[in-house]
Amino acid sequence: MLLLGIDVGTSSIKVSVVDAATQQCLASAQYPEVEATIISYQMGWAEQSPASWWLYTQQAILMAHAAGKYKPEDIAAIGIAYQMHGLVTVDKNQHVLRDSIIWCDSRAVPYGDAAFNAIGGGKCLSHLLNSPGNFTAAKLAWVKENEPGAYAQIDKIMLPGDYIAMQLTGSITTSISSLSEGVFWDFKSDSLSADVMQYFGFDESIIPAIKDVFSEHGYVSATVANALLIKPGIPVSYKAGDQPNNALSLNVLEPGEVAATAGTSGVIYGVSDTLGYDPQSRVNTFAHVNYTKAQKRLGILLCINGTGILNKWIKNLGDRNTNYSALNAEASAISKGSDGLYILPFGNGAERMLNNKLVGAHIHNIDLNKHTAAHLYRAGQEGIAFAFKYGLDIMRGNGMNPGVIRAGKTNMFLSDVFTHAFVNATNVPVELYESDGSVGAALGAGIGAKIFSNAKEAFAGMKRLGTIEPDGKEGYNEHYEKWKGYLEREV
Image 1 (tube, rainbow, N blue to C red):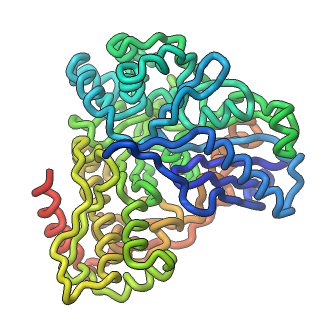
Image 2: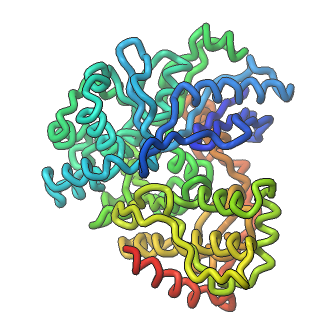
Image 3: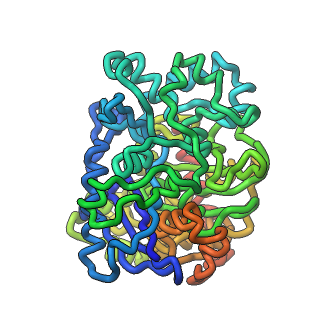
């Protein structure tokens, strides 16, 4: 019995097919091979076409089939992970009304701030566990005010993964986890937030049917099944945002467990059983994939927008033809501290951990006689690691004190420079695993379809690749303090 996982990323769509009996990945594919376009009509704006996500998803699935390592008709369930906080709007015929305003778009910050003040900061934080900030509800408020014609046609709103599920099945559903990441959920009443809906003037009819994350969200239609060479009637049995899904992929499900990822964005994600919040909403609290009204499991999320995108920008600045392995090797040849070069990695929209400010990316102390492209490579990775340290200190101030952090050996954790800078700046060991969002989504589908009896069974084959321990001799504290000084001048 096989499971299909789909990861709707900002840069590309990745799919994996997993053997449920062994939990091993049989084949993976990614499309497009180059990073997908982000549409930015104005500074701070970021949109993508949902139609392109669906096209890329179909291409990736057919590419995985073409590997010839399994029979497509043996796929029994589908799981979907997706970039969080994006807004997709469709009319009654399920036609998309406008491009998706995605997670790193900053235009809705004033709408969220106004809602926070009108509803009351104390009530927002104690009931929503967040400020409405720049999340999906505030994005929808922007559409309502600025594009009333499109808003008037809305039948349902969705997150990116809901849209892919709709294309597969024709059904539109959501979950408590999804609604909480859009800041539509009231954790005190465990229901849709009347305060948010009334303040923004949203009709409840635009909210899809609410289902558990691990449940059947629709069944693949005959037309789609024929095009994708799979059986009709397969359930989509799991949908979750990419960061809760990354935590699931690392078997981070219980209070005190913590995961990290450093892809397009950088995230530390810890699980709690307490309805807590950051007083300044710099880190955010959402319902985790295993949240239920009877058993609270909250995901505490620190997000750094300008992570992988900075690493990519610096790579292209130095040599567009180089690859990340070569970049990492060149960075490792430079001494710690990058010979006094410091980079602030905040050039990808408003940063929540900096109170939703548009700080921008900054390069400090560049010496035209001394510094090379390799110095930029290292300073960029160290700057990202220092941003993680800055955010983790906020989480520590709110009671999240990880003794170890789990991460997949992928993206920036493939770099020894970044990994050691992360470990020594935060002073927390990192356990590295063979982990992948699309594989996690596939295993989530197995849990949702009851092919696995529980998560423990689904992750029985998970193996640790190694542990990186802090080394007090690394000397990153001094460099971090200098970096922090430059940041505090900007904020």
